[in-house]
Figure 1 (cartoon, one colour):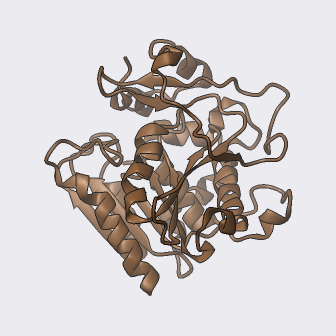
Figure 2 (tube, rainbow, N blue to C red):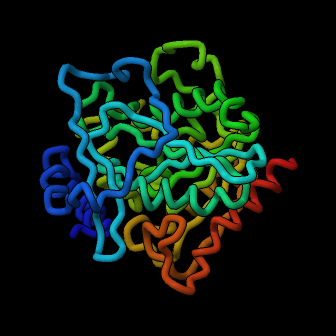
Length: 330
């Protein structure tokens, strides 16, 4: 079975094309009986028709179970029609979080950084929405904008239907992991970027998060410490200067940036701590409220429930919940 760290590490030195990703996935595809159920019963599509940038041939869905025996998790590839899954708490308090899984922009780690995040945050009263977004290198026009198109649209649809979900649209935030942390950071600074043509009344809603959590994020795509596989999968081989600048997220932090919450392990060997420190430095310079938790051990990809047994990194969802409550009090 393919381990996430192994695959992402390979991506850092040789970016995965859609063909190579599919070939790798062939070694890790589980039987249907062993597949984690996806999507859950309550979910909604992002686009009423073909998504922006769709070509004549759409990607073919290719979910797989990956990881060592006993700890396998669901990854998504080949998403042609992105969705948002809804996870409701027993006692909702009006707060809501859109969780954005990582995967180097080569897969979406929907279980570890989507489903499991809901399991950890729902008991705190937080309604969780898990984003299954399109992968930029799987054959879309303007590939670098594709994930941000989906993230913006998700925020607008959630707000447009806040009453249905029992949430306060003013208390909707995000949390993103690894490359999903980069997408979350892109949404944090680029919530108003015109990356797609509005399609209906929901697009009059704001896509701005009230707060943003970035967990071991690939924050910058221009610094030596970046994860090169994520960068190349998102930007493609010859990005123009304007596109590169738009997705160099720390440099775009400014006075209008929402409060930030950072989580990283010092021993992360895949996405160095420097990525979060870059965000912290820029946020402090811009006087943006920021809280950071840097754990000695945890590695990369620990999500909500996968940090080493006994590691303090397992506490981050509780810290995130407390920080959200404090942030919303203003």
